[in-house]
View 1: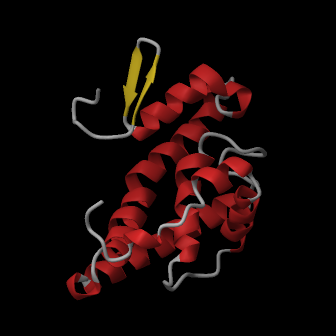
View 2 (view 1 turned 90 degrees about the horizontal axis):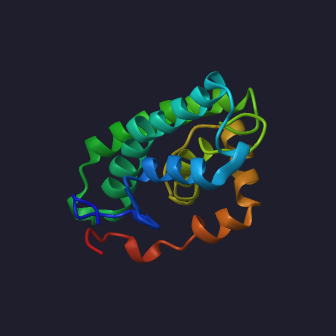
Length: 169
């Protein structure tokens, strides 16, 4: 269903959507209401900026650099220099999140919204890995708010120990 032969993909009637953030935007438009789509272009741009930032900056640095490079890769194959670079980049990126979250409880504003989903999904693994982390009081408070949500508990806070040192599925 995806011309790239990859996941994720969803099928909603006759519509097939692929690419994670395209799926998120589609679901927000089709089913999300005001919590996930904002009425004004300016308010929506706040969500879109954080969605795109997460895709282009945070997710590659965390998932590609730390989760795969440090956790998924067997220890004897670690590229310590690349891991250190990824840790430094993630420190900088999570500090950006911390500054934003000093202004409101969620990236999307006063309530959970679409912008919180991609960046928020990194937090469970980020805080569960034994890696050095800077003090991030606002990110930590945001993470606690997300942890209280049953969908976050069910879909994000999933054991991942079987992935340790394992490059294949």
